[in-house]
Image (cartoon, rainbow, N blue to C red; front, side, top):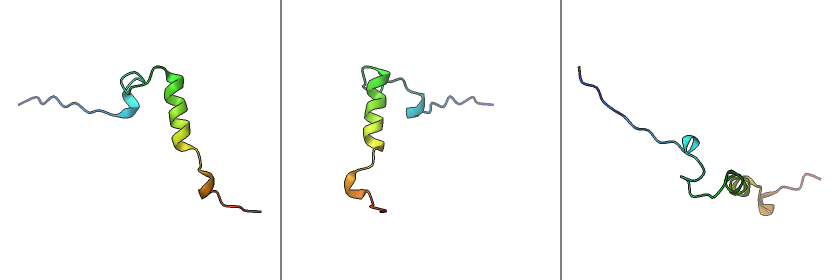
Length: 46
């Protein structure tokens, strides 16, 4: 029986520095910018 070593990479498993950020706070700030609603897509429900 042959053993196969398999390596999988996930952004959820990498540390902030591997992803190119200087701190956890910097990473979280960039994520919040990406997930923020843009005003031009905001619908006026009033």
